[in-house]
Image 1 (cartoon, rainbow, N blue to C red):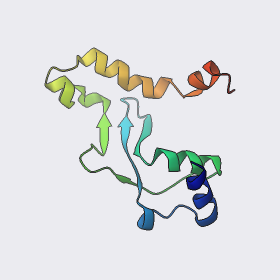
Image 2: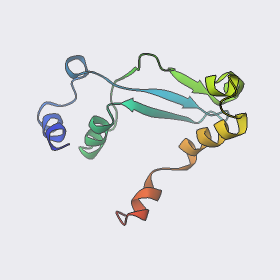
Image 3: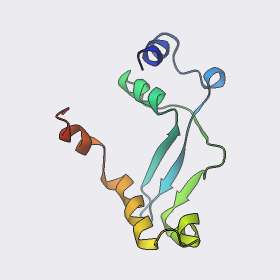
Length: 110
């Protein structure tokens, strides 16, 4: 983490040289969106710590570019019966309701 922080502080985010931070969009039915980082979490955390407010990202190979709540019946695990529609939506909605502060408070960090 320290090496990543120092590199980003000195050289900035260089996605074409070091690889893109990648993820997928979650789109709620009411129009609310979240971008979930799937690769490059450490770099993203360090960039946020450095005050960077926006970055260029890329899709992750083999992963959905976006997941729409209204298409829940088509989600692979729901479609194949490995997850109920209700359970899938509970998990999906958690990305909009939980911020991460819950864990920070639990560990006395905030």
